[in-house]
Image (cartoon, rainbow, N blue to C red; front, side):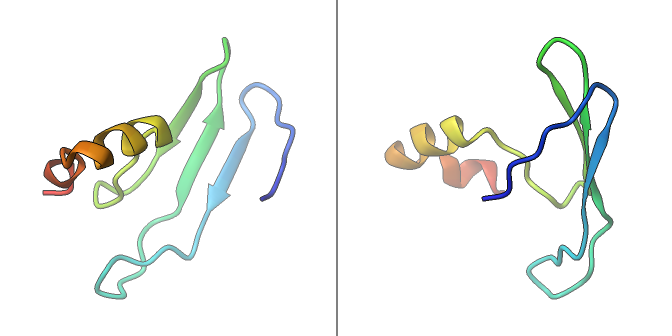
Length: 68
């Protein structure tokens, strides 16, 4: 795991992400905002979910409906 310290309005960039067909997607930008918030700019093909929701809904099978 990579640990970083970022200040307000600083950005992280994730690049080299491919879809299921091997196509390169646009970079994902994660912007640090005020009041303990983050902003995420990502291709619409990338599903962005909170880990807590993935864990909760994968147990009862509801997560599968989110991927459609």
